[in-house]
Image (tube, rainbow, N blue to C red; front, side, top):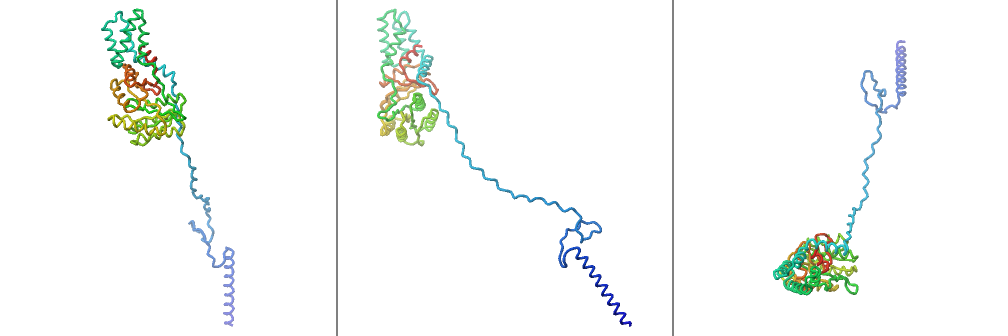
Amino acid sequence: MGEWLYLVIGIAALVVLGGVGLVAGTLRGKRGGAVGEVEQRDAPTGGAGTDLLEPPTTTPPTTLPPVPAPQAPEPEAPTAPAEPAAPTLERPEGTASRLQRLRQRLAGSQGGLGKGLLALLSRDRLDEDTWESIEDTLLAADVGVKPTQELVEQLRTRLRVEGAGADVRSVLREELVTLVDAGMDRRLQVSGADGAPGVVLVVGVNGAGKTTTVGKIARILVAEDRAVTLGAADTFRAAAVDQLATWGERVGVDVVRGAEGSDPASVAFEAVRTGVEQGVDTVIVDTAGRLQNKAGLMDELGKVKRVVEKQAPVTEVLLVLDATTGQNGMIQARVFSEVVDVTGIVLTKLDGSAKGGIVVAVQRELGVPVKLVGLGEGPDDLAPFTPEAFVDALLG
């Protein structure tokens, strides 16, 4: 009996224990998750009585939108370098206004010679002392000995024949125009034959204004609507080449240049060849002006002329002289005339000289006419020479 009692109590205990296990399993099933599954939960926020099995009561963190990855900037389209603005071309002054300024400039600077002669010739009595004073005035103006003697003789004769009623001013004007030789051909030969361009060689010592004269002649021709090419054959002076290039840019004229120290004849040849190919009207060549000795100068200028004429004949050789140098200018004129066949003379700085008689002297010395005269530093201060305008300016 006692054994059955123990058996019943044991069976009852097993039943109770089984029921408790069943209830615990049910509760676990309700909280979710199969047996053996590990549940990930946030760490506790702290605080008494927090059940580690319960979900956290804090507000979940705000989820930020994803930050876009930085994008490389789009490459900018390459821009073409800005082209420099084309230089504004100048319109050179015409011949008519140049001649007008020639009269005005010479009248202001050369009037001393003419006024002095008129004052002496207007005396009541023309004695020997007066005629000697007239000779001295002409010689001081660089007219030269022989031309002075000729002029004085002509004036003596005419005033003696015409007597006291003679118009002294008219007589002096006529004789001065004759002395300057109005019959000379002063036209610039700037046109070639058979479609070839005219070729102008410009010669003279450095310092006389040779390169500037080339630029100013180009302006005269451009004002007459002629196409021009310049040759910078004074290759021994870099400044001369740059200066000539500037003159060309101002009026839209091409300038052919070579490296510093290159052969002047090759540059002159290339300039004329370019002019022939482009069909221009005139090619003007600036030559070197060194004057160490006549032999070297002759070789250099002779070579330039020979090489150039393989392309086109030289139509003009202009000798540039500084009017203020007086007898030194005459010496230079003689040397160059022996080296090259000078066909015309350009007198620069004539407006600043009281010695206008150099016009007469140099023409007598070389037997060639003064064709152009420089009147100042301005770009258009170069004008064709006319004896009448010159003499009128001398007389004021």
